[in-house]
Length: 361
Ligand code: UD1
Ligand code: UDP
Image (tube, rainbow, N blue to C red):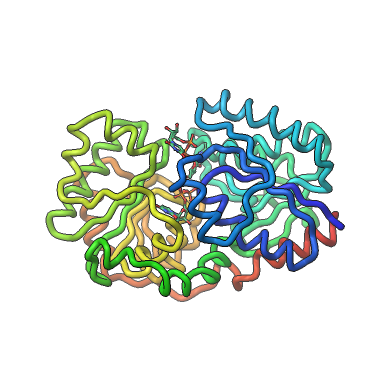
């Protein structure tokens, strides 16, 4: 029986791994889940295991936060020990976080095969820590699970052989399909925040290029504050952004009447996304979920890896360099619809991943 060692550690990775773990079980594969501890607040970690019906991770490394080198280095050493103790046939990594990088490097040095979910994405901006992580993870991976055609093309242009690349579709689409009805049935967040369907904007902000640049952060918060004078604006706040805002009362004041709430679980997030008039975000996952749930999106970045949604008209980029620009982009996007398409597969990405792993290793 193929033994898969899964390395996850950050919020979006719990969500991505949930449908894949289910598919691995259905395919009869053995899985050991290693949680690096990169995200550790209950609202950034435990809530997803509880809500998505995931087994607790077999191994918890408790690495916590740190500078990139310190955090990644401690993960690398701990994952190496875990691989040596558990003898997997393949190490499975997700996305582009420091947990992805550490998992891929640890396996590569031990010459254990690596499979990368969300391979081939590129922003072409090496100032992003995620871009370095995904380039390195792809470079050392043996099996590249590409979510989109663009991702396949990027890998092909980098000289990766066709038999190392599997176009699977996006596991986040699988997750959205699997959990939307539970969100409808179980989430009470709209009622508890007194929100009306189609009558509020949902925002998330956490990307380092926005939170760690005081001017960009000021523009984003100022724009949300401006929008909150005419719209209900809800902002589930990532701890990275919370740290920056709470260090500075002036920043908090910029948010105006924005309803700032703690990070929410996945079911509440789906419920908030599905009923929003508009989503304003710098998140990779939330950009796609806006499309899955048929909601227009403004992305507060200079570029995106998910270019299909720009082409289809569901998403538009707005670099947060001026408050008026962000406000105008948001106002213009409310009420718009994009074109039909199916850039993220048929909702069976997880099954394709499990089948590939079973047949290759
Ligand atoms: C990480 C990923 C990013 C991903 C995001 C998903 C890297 C380099 N970045 O960014 O690609 O989009 O996760 O959410 O891996 N913190 C807490 N509690 C927690 C976790 C973090 O308070 O449970 C705070 C700490 O102050 C920490 C900061 O958030 O220093 C940043 O956390 P970190 O995991 O380093 O990066 P993210 O910004 O979360
Ligand atoms: N998410 C969530 N609660 C929140 C904010 C986001 O459950 O308060 C989910 C969201 O629905 C998506 C994922 O977290 O599935 C995206 O993670 P994040 O924005 O942290 O990271 P990124 O996708 O940018 O790497």
